[in-house]
Length: 427
Image (cartoon, rainbow, N blue to C red; front, side, top):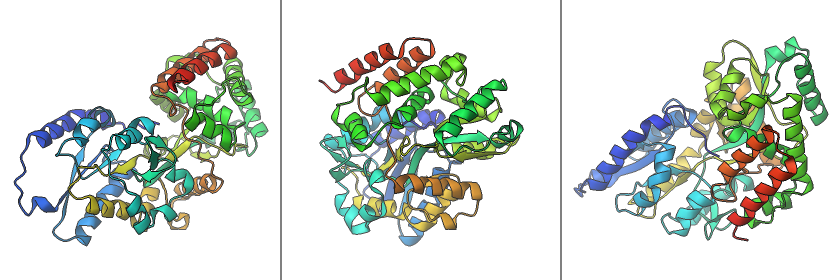
């Protein structure tokens, strides 16, 4: 799932310049340049990752005298467009942040553009440190995510949760729900009071994530595997039928505003920040922004009640291009980002580290964020994202959920999804 940083798109021009400079520049072969680790990433400087990785660079240079880490910022969109060309050139960076999934890291691994990190995973102990659900996005077999060799390593994770406005919950005498029945009762209470309970954005991923979370309520591991990996999903089974019927019903009841059909993800976040809706179901990538931007009310998070699974996965990956000149040092840097100092710093800044110790996190809300992550991975509950199985399925899902919001019948919408999904898998 794409997690847009607010300023990352503004860095595209800088990225192009950097790529051009890199591609055209010559190598002096000097000793100093032989000890430069070129690192590319697309996180905002003031984000949790930006702050933690800056500290990692500092520690790396201290631990490796004579070495310099040259950090280049790019944008998510730019690296998506240029990665194959960049990594296929002799001027590829030594280490780079890249998106996980079959169409991204999987594709590059299949094309032989990434270093197989399996030996490093064993020697550094990443295979023991990272939970199975996190490893799934690191390992690819013939370009397909889930198993095989290691071609990337995340140092943070993502999962969907419920953000809630504590002040509105208190005002309308709603307790934090711990069961699905309590959750749906809370939706009804807010709506009866004239408040739209759930913030949403139909024009981007939020609406399809609601649909996915509803389907996951009826899912089991074989259902998720069939959907994500084998192309055997049945969009008219009990899970998808329940999800589409319930989502359409929520729109009809006004739990989700029908006019949010044309709104984007940021509109959803803005609505929650403005106090227009007391709840918002989405990923932890909103957490840091809410920490700094919500000052008018108290807020918190809770896991989706009554669900074993939630959308989520390991975060974006550190990958080592096949043309990296310092693959061994790149692996050393990756290992540094998995150490307690950097992991706990990620947690302190509102991110979900893959291997942090909750007891080392002093802020109660950040500690709860980490604890809830550990609860999910402890039950192997990360269920990935609905747009992963098929290229361009994101747009298909967005259109489908918009059609649901506009009143198209659930069975008709599910039929259209089945057709696109089946075609995408080449069946």
